[in-house]
Length: 370
Ligand SMILES: [Zn+2]
Image (cartoon, rainbow, N blue to C red; front, top):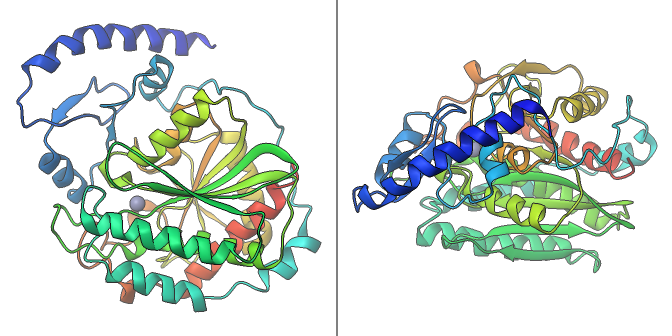
């Protein structure tokens, strides 16, 4: 454990002892304790207040149910400090080496099925994580992933349940090693209230269809990796990274080895036409490796940062796992429609979906043998 982490742990413990008594004093309507920066000690908010923060484009992490002091300490560690991982189980390669395997698979990638899946995702009134539509979207996603996975009987699809009613969905292609290479996207959406229209096309229907397309190609090919590949579809991201927090807390408790977690949140709108490497609150070694893969298979990349708690890679990181986030566009020119009724099917740029589908597929092939 590095010194800054110890100090953060002490700070976190002190915060816990001061924060706990106030739980009795909070407004009874207050439901969630959220954190908006490493320094923020936490604020109790109602569900309505939480949703309205999201609508204003403000990022936060819901820490109400996070009990692990080490996770709370990492959530209070500034991005400028290196965090100590549970274990760095691998040294990442310095070049892409699996082109002869990956390229024939990349040739199978198309936008045909992603267009159909995207239409269905957008047809849900919203995919709010505490609502009936969010649950229905989870059922549809589970059934769709199961149907795709049926091409290879080795693949399993499971629901990971949470304290809220929308499950996360996990698809596993078992390898000869239990070490995990994970790609993730969230399938919930928000329009600023529990009832608002929220098609969630770019945010993050795009990441969902990118992962499903990579899964489709690998399943149809009977692809057999060394490392175990997992596709994670998180619920409750817009509620403060809730689904991914539950999944990675469980993985940490179970002592799982995660070699890489690559997040895809917004993968369908890119005026710049380049995959964007996000460099804050991520693992710099994994990010450098994933950038090598992205460059080898899709050309030059752009760079950006998105701030505290901006998406599910933060949950992998706070549980001590190496995480990276590659999106569709630098933050300043990314989709202006997200978290509203305008984040619609019509705004999706299919060459962008194609680019990210090939990147994710290439990353899975390359990383399946590290
Ligand atoms: Zn998102």
